[in-house]
Length: 273
Image (tube, rainbow, N blue to C red; front, side, top):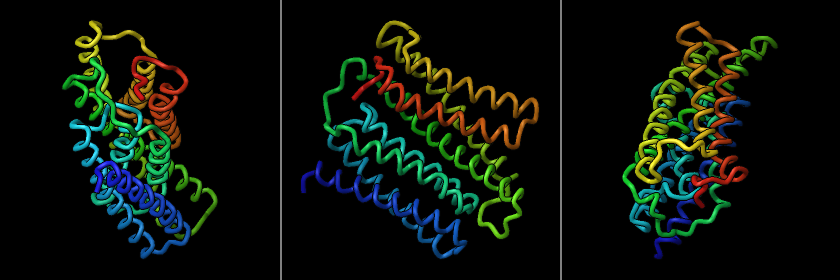
């Protein structure tokens, strides 16, 4: 069987798995049936395994890691989101988080499915080992921020349920969501810092300058500053609750704009197709 066809088949199956799991997570939260939650988790794990196979096939086809164009980063981004979610789930067994995280993975996969998938030779600026460090840390960082945004959304819904006096829920306690969102953001922030530092070093080798205020660089810095404010207020002022949750959501919106918006609205040297 042709590798390209097999890769596309694996990508499609993973996309379908994520789609079904996202729907089942919503049903799980609405109906509060543990059996549905277990099926959703199983589909997520299966989809992640198939997605990993698709990425491995892409590596075999191209002879490099899948980090060099919009499609490759989008599919790697979705993979990073699901990886971070599964780590959180198996560490804390918070099944309901999937209802807020897997739809994000589904949307990113949907975006990837609409992009050109052809493998092209690397342009000279991309032929560097720094590419893998820079983009690899971005995948983990963005995936962490997606999970943190999901936890923040859970916190806001949990607080809303308290106000309306709703009964049984399968969501973790609001305080737990708040704390875990902070921990995940702290990890993602560390990775994002490495993204910016390695990007600057790579830019020095590729274009003889560390920083050029390129739109992608500028928005990466804006995103870093948003999370810097969050970390500062949380660590030094004990900031938590609804303001922190909304800040986590706003930070992830900035991440999405940095990834998708900049490439499509503000063309730059980073707008690889």
